[in-house]
Image (tube, rainbow, N blue to C red; front, side, top):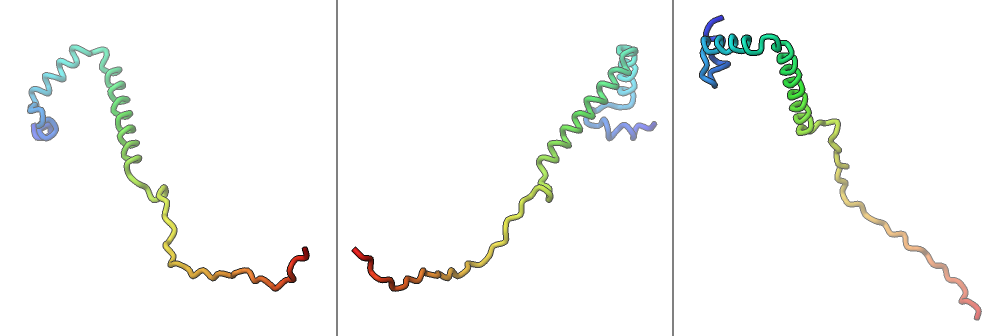
Length: 94
């Protein structure tokens, strides 16, 4: 691999190819037998983190299926009052 392949990835830390190789060798020496389990737990951690971030993004973005559309505005309608018609009735007998 060339130096350019590592350069953009680790430019933030200022690490070169030799420093990365040294860290890999130290990692193998220190965690030799535990590397598979460390890799598994790191993979699970990253997966759970991505799921959590995805869940937050889904909660933040409005979706069209969940939006409630308001009823269209209708112009005011004329109220026709139909007043009750009173017929002349004879006065009550007392």
